[in-house]
Length: 114
Length: 114
Image 1 (cartoon, helix red, strand yellow):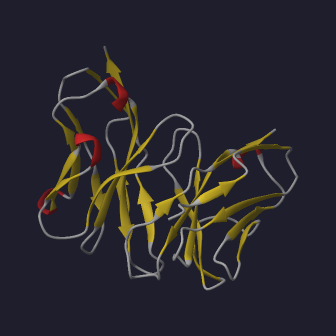
Image 2: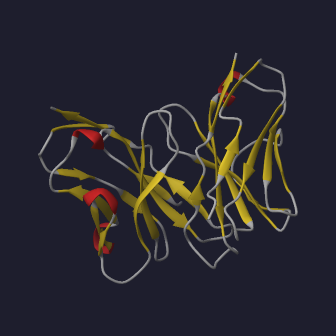
């Protein structure tokens, strides 16, 4: 059974640029959640995708957007990057919402904005 | 509002000593509770979880946690710490109102003295 994978592992962007992060969910999981973990903080919920639709959103501006594909993989897009967007971005997958209360995390993508 | 508090930002223990990491939560319903460990530059590894039943739960690496509803706590314990336990530990509550998501505490960084 393949776990949650994320790409790239690290990347460096300049303020104002746009970035796309990718996540492949664990086999059999059709729900993907994204979290932002700033340095020295706990992860914070960005949004969740289920059946290719946004299924809830945390307190993040619209320049954070996402997609989910028919194979349940997902992308997180951030436009107009700001220095404060520098963080570890974690993807988590889970079965049908409500079927399991455990989310399975990927290794994360470390984004640095200069 | 739903929240998780980890009162100790840093804890230092000697190798072989016992460990207790504190976690308090605020949640209106029966919580789903988790402890994760994160090594530097790494993603999150699940140590243990509580959904229901026995309030003392066993996890990996010799960790255990006790759910105390009256105190809204879910403290993590280990009887004898190993140098490899040095890492950051996060407590999380699974919030089932609306979109199911995790709410994390700010973490406790554990240092182990040889």
